[in-house]
Image (cartoon, rainbow, N blue to C red; front, top):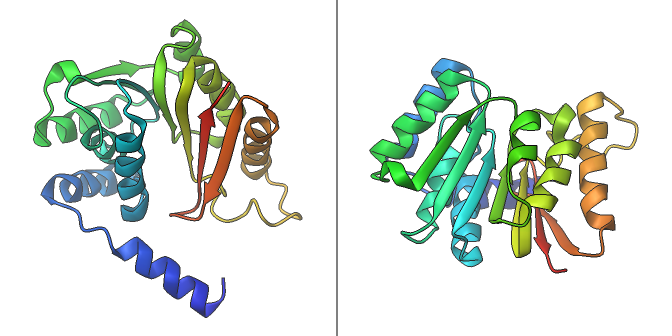
Length: 211
């Protein structure tokens, strides 16, 4: 990344100021060894959620609630988010963040379990927005399931879509990078999706189901 590009990236990332709710959630993330989405990514999630008009959302990977709170803040009062995580401590931290942000319990549904086991049980074409921030080795499966769950006009978002900036390096063949490339290629090659990758954070893949 050149100096000018890095300067622009840093400037854009620093534009978003966060309140005490997200700052406390980030502190819990530090204590649990969890790296939530960055400030720029959190702001983008709120904006994308607001643009989507989504009422039904699935989050794959709860983290400590930073991404979930950010998404919920962009949604209408009748929307419901289902968040999935295998780690109970992460789910507890996310619940705490949702509560501190003032969201009623009926706005969120937390599911403890492996996403690869939970997702197949969810209804085809029943969701407006899918956000994925989970283990990379299973990312192609999560993306495929997310595409199934979305209704027409729905949005799928993948965090860290550049795998810590390794995806653009052709010689990098580590398993997580290869899996991330496969997931992106799967969406780009589908005729019923339009996609774009933005450099916010370590990359966000945005995909809208048009068919």
